[in-house]
Length: 465
Image 1 (cartoon, rainbow, N blue to C red):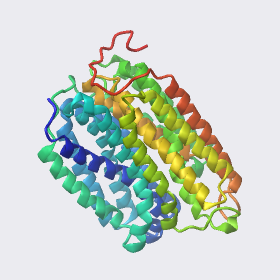
Image 2 (image 1 turned 45 degrees about the horizontal axis):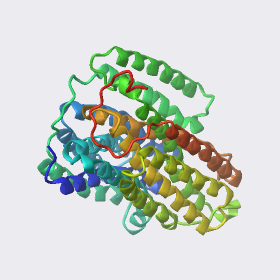
Image 3 (image 1 turned 90 degrees about the vertical axis):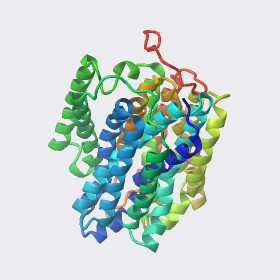
């Protein structure tokens, strides 16, 4: 039965999801400051980002499945308290080792995304599900932009530790409101958590993402990188076998074969590569001193302000897409989002000598991200049974993270000064253009689907076609 507190529930979910999304991007611009303050090396400081990525990738689908089984509300509250503990530990961390542990704990918050989508599906009127998912997706997308924009002023005006103190307050209030006002799930999946599946899933994700994230430092032909990639292939095969044989799989592979799911997941993988790479490359580009032959020598704060058009466009596009979906199906919105993002990367590859060009490209890219985030969530939610929402949306979010790790691993040819050549950025943005066009092609293969009406999917042979 739909809840009477839907507005408050949405505010709670948006607060939790927005903070976690912000934590993903908030640290990247401040990483040099953290490295200097903690007297550590660049390679060690990079683990502040890598540890968070690995933790979120492992926890998101697993905890999403736990929510389907044990109840989404209690799982959401537990996740928020875990993020609170991670932020508090990070704010007080005496050295980089403790900070990395804190970031691993924070990574559990990735499960906020699938849990929130599942709660919306359970508690909202069927006619409001699609629009609410679009609005929440807009908040998630904009949260990443807020992190990029806010990092500079926070670090400059206060201290890098306030990057965690602010989330401590927000998450604490959100957890209390969730405990008080979010109802427990009326639907539960049957079965239990497949811990063998969880271990194998964790194994192949870590074995894949670790060399992808660190390959440029370790050397792509090094024994460690090759061994980890080989382990990822073996563990992935074992995971597929174990899940196909399990009576209570962690991820129901039948659902992964549903056309709307596998096409959206393929688009998420490719789109994630483009999105995370732009968030990573663009601030570095504008902060590059002009002596390198390009760039603007911008401060962290100025580079964040150049990303402001992206933030605004992401939020507006995400909200508007929810209004459009009853008339324009989610597949077309996802195609439009991927094409818009591809156009933005093409603009960056061809024109990047003036700051206004960067701002325009950022705005076009934000438009694409806003459209894509909301449509991907709606395609997944509309294509799976209600009791599988957490696991399915968690896997989709996870694939975006995997794509992001792959995209940011695009290496650049460095000058003797240690800065990339301008041609390296041109090649990188050109490659991202192709990846995003690939995401549009994957989206074009998805079935047409209008606003989510909380269908009860029956996994017949026809449904998986």
